[in-house]
Each structure stands twice: as structure tokens, then as C-alpha cells.
Image 1: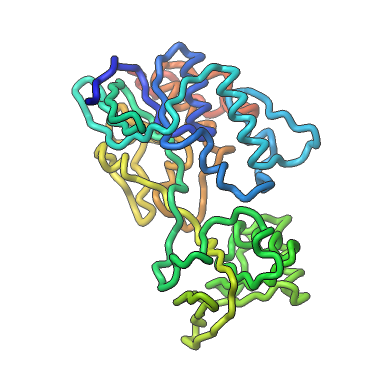
Image 2: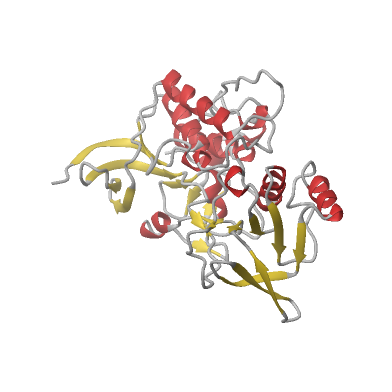
Length: 355
């Protein structure tokens, strides 16, 4: 049987980088906080391909004013960053309820009730305020075509080795697809890249990846099929449709669908947050990150909603979310965010109406 535990000042849902940075700032401010994650801390990073480097430079992804050790002065890998997050949690002794998913948020006169479902059984907690820092990469953006669930088809790229001397068809045209194509080709795969557009958008593929990809396409080492869309996958081939309606059948031993991911807005909906536009982004006041529900805030990439034509929120531009939330709650801007000064975003006290 579940039991309701004593009320806390704040509950944080999500233990990615911004959720952890918020927990650190609240602890330093003397604010009692509960912290939950359905998986382990930094979970999204844990299913990045091995040895994948951040596109952001080190100083932009540092959190809580704690430097990220970097002996080579280059961008760090996902593995490096997970070790960094573990170190921060240990050093600051942040208490995070990992593997305890929050299933429901109920509004109360005194704040909110959170219903969680850990393996040990349902629990109920109360908090005066709630911050949703749940990220925006909960599940793959499915194509909903026949064969998408076949065992040789995946939306997740782990490492290139399994594709050695195999025919690999990759669907997509942004950073993930471009980098996967290059890494798998260099690991000995026969790579074909299918993209629904005629050419790559330089704003969607990093400047140090796109020239390499274009060079390999020009040399013929990577096959590029522009303006094609997969309509069916079989055990031995992918059936593609060109924009002119003609059909192309391409043999494939493996299929990698790099079609993006979707955020999970379920908790926002259960709490009554208004979701706006095609992206179903939560409505919030950018001065405080408070949603249309008083006492309920959004932080990090979840502010962008369920689906995005283009990503606009990243670790490096979400530190300010932490500052705005902490200032709205305590009346003071936190002293330690990232390692790049962000006090320029601090708001006058009369504008934040802390309560």
C-alpha cells in the first residue's frame, strides 16, 4: 500500500544535466527538494553511440559551476560526460530517486501530489512546487511503415562494428544520420543514405561533418539517394518511393532509421499544462519558466515540446532556465551555473514575484 510522505518545497522530475544543475542550485540555496528519474541519471546519454563526441565545446556543457576535466582540450564523449555527472552527484551528495518513474501529478490546495511507481510499489509524495526537466528524447519518431519492427531494423545506433561488410541503409539527413553513415563506412559497411530532401541543410549538419560526408558521396564510397522516402521494409530490402512517385528497391542487410525522437508530454497533460502548436510545447513564462499552472515549471529541452522541425534547446542554452526558476522561488539568482557567466539574464526582483 502506498503512503504519502512529508511535503517538500520542490520536486524535480528528470535527472539529466539541467535537472542535476537545478538540484545543485536548490541545495546551495537551502531549498528542500525531491528528485526523481524513471531511469539512471543522464539516461539519454547512456544510449548514445559509443565514443560519440559532443558538438558543444566543454565549457558550454559544464554545470553547477564545476569544471569538466578535459586533458586533450577537445570535445568530450558521452562516456566522459556521464562520468562527470556521476562525480557531481557524489561530490554534492545529491539525493536522486533513480528508477522511480513519476506516473501522475495531481494538483492540491497546498501544491502537488506526485504518484511514483518504483519496483517496490507505488509511492506518493507532496511538494509545494514541481519542475519538469524530462528532456525531449523519450521515444523514436516512428515512420509507421510495414517492416519497421523487423529485428534487423533499429532507430538506435550503438556502434559501427555490427555493420562490417554488411549492406546498411540509413534513413535521415541530419547530424545523427550523417555521422552514422561516416562511422559505419569507415568500419567497413556498404552504406546507402536515403533522405527525403534534395540536399543537406548546413544548419542541420555540423560544419565539421558535412564536408566529409559530401566528399564521400562525390567519391561514391557512400551512396546517396536524395528525395526518397521508405514505404516498406522487408527482410532483404527497403522499398523507397521517389518524389516523382517511382519506386526503388534497395537491398539491405540492416536498416538504421535516424528519424529523430519525440518528447513525452504525458506529465504536462496530467497536470493541466497547456500544450501549444504542432510541437505541443508547454506554455510558460520565459521570465520564470513557470507554466500556466502556478507552481509548476519546465526546465531544459522539454520546453521545446514533443516534436520539433528544428531543435532549439540544448544543454548550453538551458543553464538560464535553472537561474530563472531558482530566482523565482528564492528571490536570488544562483551564483554557480555552468561556467560561462549568465547573470546577464538575471531579472529585477519586482519582475519575478517570488512567493
